[in-house]
Image (tube, rainbow, N blue to C red):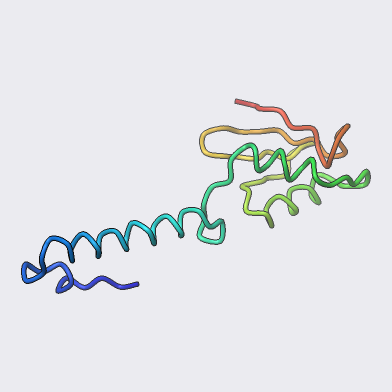
Length: 107
């Protein structure tokens, strides 16, 4: 959706302007909720993803790749994967007792 300056001109009444702004607001909500548009996943999504699968042979690089393909900011480190979500940093150690990794918070 494109909004031109003329769409918000003074020739429209208040209701028309309100409808245009509501349309923008609704579009923003759709874009914000869609991970394809770069929404930041929260910790519950990370924990859910990790717990849904099990692979006893997953390496640190495999786990980092897997998490990155699911739109997480994941970096392989020495023996674990560092996952940044907002200002929080998590440690994901592959081959966890349940699921793909054991998850703990670093800061």
